[in-house]
Length: 460
Image 1 (cartoon, rainbow, N blue to C red):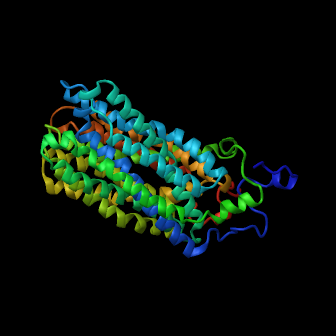
Image 2 (tube, rainbow, N blue to C red):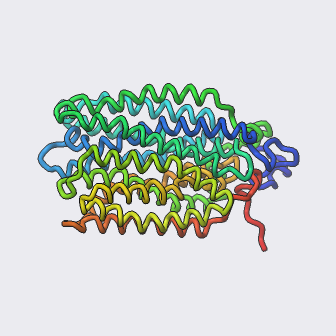
Image 3 (cartoon, helix red, strand yellow):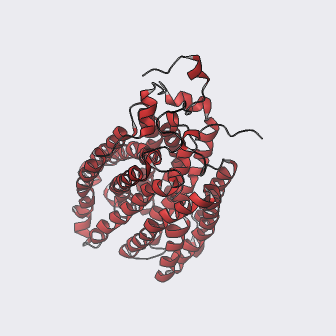
């Protein structure tokens, strides 16, 4: 499709609509369409992020021994966690490419593509030979499979969030769109439930075939998600853009010409994700190391409980942001996480399991949900319709790069002794502060009508 050339169309800011245009200020398909989209986003995100996070558990628990030379345990852990970060390197590329097509051919089609990419990549991990079998080829293949996961994840959150937002009723966009992230947390819970019995296997069975089972099981998850998403309707917002021949030929070029500042704000705000990868991956590896000495099964249950709480808290906090605004909830969440991350690692260093559970729930289950429940709606709301998928995906995925390497950075900067965790906690807290500042300078969007999103704020 080509961009209209009439003077009236050219004079209209990107993302605005002529009178009577489909979608209007109400947007979406009302409550019914919002519920259907929210359910599809929840199930799809749950099933896709199951795949993405079983990799994180495996990278922390078994990959150092399976895919890297023996003899240096610390080097093996850092190398395995670096392959986790490689997925985040691919995410900006996936965000750019999939965002382009999401704004060109539709949200629904690209959401199906992301599922199939993730399924193929995850199944490939479960079929890989180990270092003992093929030498250096093993970690190379592992990295390639992880790149496939990252490319898929780069477009998944933006697609699910954009589609749900554009189906949601006014005044409840935060609540409906948050189900994409509730699904993500449910996927993490599911991943841990699968990994708990696997981690409990005898060492020889775990290292020979047990670790592969969660990856094999992912193909069933992807088939189910595919069925759900195939039945979902395209958004009225995108269909209206297509009907009026108003799709940008190069969405990324339009994005950086009209909303480059919003891309930067989303990028820096996205550093909030460091809290999750530090909690999920570094925390798991650190807690089960010789220094802390906690059991693998215990820490997997910690993740299950914290993320199960988040499944409920995420939509509740998002609904609160529909009433009081995105920015105050986000900033309070970022400050709380910066404090609680210190408490969480201190609890691990004491070896007190009850304290670990308490701080895990406070940090990941409650405080982190204040950002995790908002970013699907907030990042989508910052951009006009014709560049919404691209803007969301590009800004967030470049920001998530640091989160991807946060576990490896954590092991690189951690100290010695009982206070070894302090530099890691400081690193995470600084990222939280940057995220809060980025949101502080961004505009509030919770009461802006759908048709007006992405337009410059009126001068006063």
